[in-house]
Length: 262
Image (tube, one colour):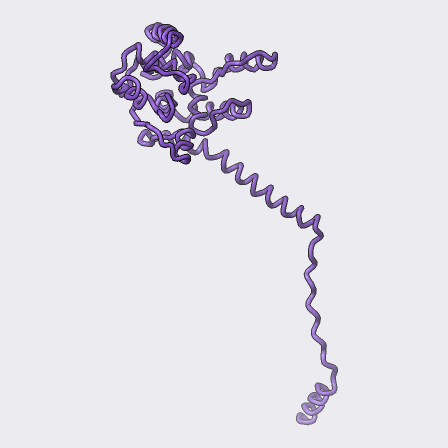
């Protein structure tokens, strides 16, 4: 009986129809509009991710710069390296800089350095009002804002750069001490073509270290900062000498203005 069932089964297999295999489905090629729309969305996601990373780099580096052994470089110094021009910069600690130089720079660049939180809002609002009225504007950049610009941004003036300076300056003032901000600024500030930092400037223009600058030399270096490519503290004209004398007088009377540094 068992053998007859097997025979019948085998016979059924032979006489049954063979199933034809299903044809593989062709992948639909997307319409050109949908294809480019998907690519555009992907590029947009990558672009946003890259922008977020770029925006996070300056705040992250600012935290990193709290370590005193780290000697930051400016974007202008990086430019000179990339273009193979090279530059001069000898990092010097804050305590090895003549106090009269610090006083002169503060009185020339940012007399409220110890009082504000990175941004002098009164001066900035005044500049904005003048700009809206169509009047010629001045910088209104604090030393902290200039430090942010030198470390992370570009040199050409623009409202976009100024808008980026403000939050960066507030952040830097939050995470770094006033003393560290001043130390970094004086070591990355441009004092001539390829000359960065007060130590290199002191040797270049006066043949002495930053610790031995006189009041007059310090004042001349301070008033050079707004336009270092056009002003020469080693060979000052009458206008530069007049400005330096005014800053030298202010430095002598700085007193409580610099108390956050000493």
